[in-house]
Image (cartoon, rainbow, N blue to C red; front, side):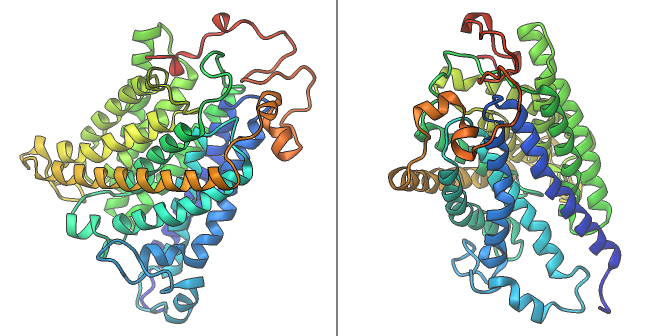
Length: 440
């Protein structure tokens, strides 16, 4: 192709592969936090998004996000690029990056966003119910909201509203966090929660997963520049800054509250920082990114304890990390945005007033309301058709055997609830939750 920029094309394809690796990284991150008798189910819930969402994206998902607008910036036409056939016929030789490269890159966003929700449903959701929920949710919630945010020519949040969201604070993290909250509330608590502490069964797996997520997130954020350019480098550095500061923010809170800095806290801080900088990666300076990340780590460290006070069983803190840090990162643009960044918009602390902060708040609120309403409908559809939960006996014995006829570990004396070993399980009072997950 005469107009093709091979460097930019290679960058986008490489970043797409980075983002794809985030899904196995997420499977490790969640799987390590699961009990030893539910680790396979948790990882299967995450990996299933690669299959299901990948197919739906090719058929009509890309078209619903980037197809011809049919609703005043609310939805793309599912038929515009159905099956991607028209792209094969009309991909312009003058384009710097082939459209199919963008198709592949954005596919990984849809897959990961859906997989994030799984962390709220550990130990109790039927695998078939999860698959039905995933297909409906990505179609009815993610694809429309992604059109609002990522279609920079037609989506109402990006155009009419003028909100800044570089890589998906609204469409990805607020969306997934709200969906996780709705799902775990309607489905109900695990039978043993919070009476029995459910410890992560493999913290080394959790930390490895967090490291892979950080690696992949460079593709997530820097790749969203759309080219191998200054904006990509800017987003890359901000991703380092915010995430590093978030680790420290989380660990400081842990040390002050519980006297210990934990590996689970460090891993969770990584994710909180990555989430917060996602919308702001091209809007704030590196110094601003340090503040955004540090606040995100501290906020999420406190927020994960809210589930104990409010009584919702969000197993792996999708709400406390993705919703809280995603909301903070979205709003932080209105405070710390600077005109010297690629997005070129001053926030409140840089003399820009409160207008951008208000715009960011409207974008976040619209995503919250739409996702909450539609997700509620979807969850009730699944509940009253095929049912959401496994039987009590299956939940108690271990969901891996019940749902997949497999176990993660062929070892004698396995016990559920998050630990390996043959020793009898101690009373709940003798097995406190890791500080990162304790009640606030």
